Amino acid sequence: MVEYRDWYRTQYWSEREGQPIRYIVIHDTEGPRDAALSWWSSPNNPYKSSAHDLVDASGVVWRCVPYDKAAHHVGGSHIPGFNQLDPKTGRYEPNANLITIGIELEYPAAPASPPWPQAQIDAAVEHVRELVRTYQIPRANVLRHMDIDPKNRNDPRNLDWEGFLNRVFPVVEQELERALRHSAWNAGGIPYNPEAAFASYAREHGLGNPETPEFDFTFDGQAYRGQGFSKAIIYARAGQWNQIKEVPW
Ligand SMILES: [Zn+2]
Image: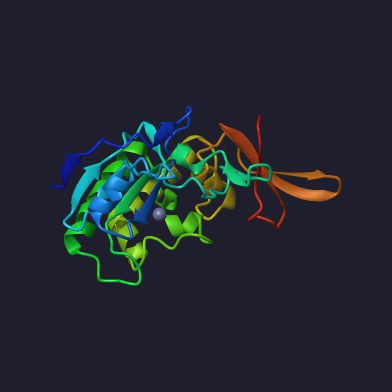
C-alpha cells in the first residue's frame, strides 16, 4: 500500500480549460524533497512551478495539486499532435500542462546518480498504475520530461524506463488489451491491423473509435490513404505513414 500525504499548499496551478487528462509526465526533483515542496509555494519562484505529486525517497506520495487543475511542470514542452511552436510567443501552444499529470520523483541533483531506492520505485509504480487506470492512459502516453523537452531537460535521470513501464503495464495486461481491441474493432465491422499507423496515431491522440475502414483516394495525381475516427479524419500520402494529418469531419 502506498502512503499518501496531503500537501496542498501551492497556488501554482491553472485551470485545465476543459482539456482532458491524456498524459502522465515523470520528472525528478534534482534536489531534496523539502526543497522541491517549498519551491513550489515560494513567492520567489519566478516560474510558478509545481507538480501534482511528489514521490519521496522513502516511497511516500505527497499530493500537491488536485488532478482537475493543471500543475505547472511542462510549460515549455512539445507534445506532437497537441501543441506547436507559436512564432509570436516563442512558446508551444496550447500549453502541455493542460493535458498532463506531473509526477516528481525525489532524486539528488546532478552529478550525483545513486541507484533509485526500491521503496520509492515500488510506490511510484503503484501510484502511476492507479492513475493510468483512473484516467485510461495508454503506455505510449506515459512520458519522461526528457521525452518532450529534450533540449532543456534530462529528467528523470538514471531510471530504467522500460523496466518502470513494464511494471506499470504488466505484459499480461498489455496482451489482454490488444486482444480486446482487436475484438472490439471487428465487432464494429472494421478490420484491425495492430501495426497500422492510423490505429496507433488515433489512440495516442485520443481521436475516439474508428468510424470507417482505411480507404484510398487520389488527389492531384497523388495517392493517399485515410480513415475516419469519431473525432477526426486522418490521412497520409501513400508511403509517408509517419506524416499523418488530421481534418475535422
Ligand atoms: Zn522535469
